[in-house]
Length: 376
Ligand SMILES: Cc1cc2nc3c(=O)[nH]c(=O)nc-3n(C[C@H](O)[C@H](O)[C@H](O)COP(=O)(O)OP(=O)(O)OC[C@H]3O[C@@H](n4cnc5c(N)ncnc54)[C@H](O)[C@@H]3O)c2cc1C
Image (tube, rainbow, N blue to C red; front, top):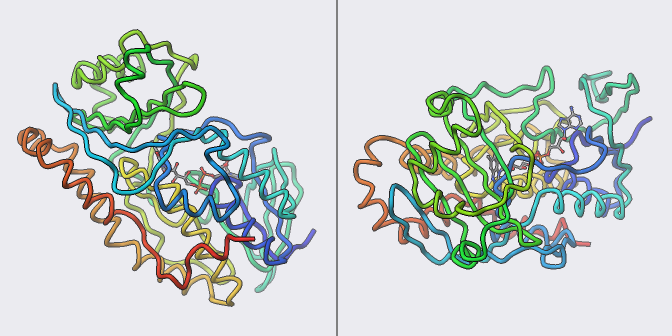
């Protein structure tokens, strides 16, 4: 079976690129290994840029129940400070978002193959990619978009994560008092080897997502219950927030080895790498979805304009490098011992600093490639 474009992975980046290309009349097949969208490890914060791109794709997050987020609150040891976000933001479960994106891709005319994973992607001839699926079938196209998120395809992998990050996500129904107190804030709770984010999503549910270095997880006995207890001990604000909360999942979902700071250096002709396969920004910025949408849009624009994939990849890298390094420095600062020693100072400057960080860690784009390629 041959199409003009083959998209591997039907998460944020894969769906966004497929919709943009199908709307411009290209024949696109998208292969997603999950039969239906399911929970993903994610803080589920949607930044202003993500909201803009989703709107251009025709995704109305408010109608899906997204909760507006107006404040960011930073909590460490026994203190918390907050600042208004300098951009509109919202939160929505990935299950709801991914469901809406896949539906939009199908409506745009993308051939979506679900429940089958890509095992390998190879060149069949100089101008033809061949993806072989786990059921033995294969799909071919002159151009492929690699959008498998955190999962690497053999032969197209990314470097290993030296810090051995471990991330968890779960949902709670907070007590009425804590729900009112959390209100429309995205809260960042800090520990000596990681951080967590807590914010409301749709249907009266609250997301708690955390990322810790393996050594911190090891100190808590390599078990979720121990980790949760340690995080609450290190950050009493979290203990207060979860007081009387009802856990909604039997156990949290988890992922390991997240290559934060990665930006792909190059790629092969005819292979556009997007989303987490292009760059992995530290989670505390809440910018991964925005990066996924941005790289999808840039790649779709490049493909339509005949810009070769290696040229685009180099451009993306130099555009994203400063923001990525800044986000890494900020993430390191949140976790290192020196920063903890001057925590009262960090807390006192955080509201101002966050405004700068929020702007600088965001991947901006020139007006020429603004969201029109996503529009109908
Ligand atoms: C702990 C944590 C918290 C985060 N919090 C936030 C946040 O609050 N806000 C934010 O904006 N970003 C956040 N991010 C980042 C964000 O989740 C990702 O950057 C974003 O999902 C990347 O989109 P993607 O399309 O590249 O990958 P995904 O959305 O993960 O999609 C990849 C898809 O490919 C499919 N797939 C994988 N392998 C195969 C295969 N072999 N064959 C076929 N299909 C395959 C998967 O099933 C999946 O659906 C967070 C990340 C982490 C780790």
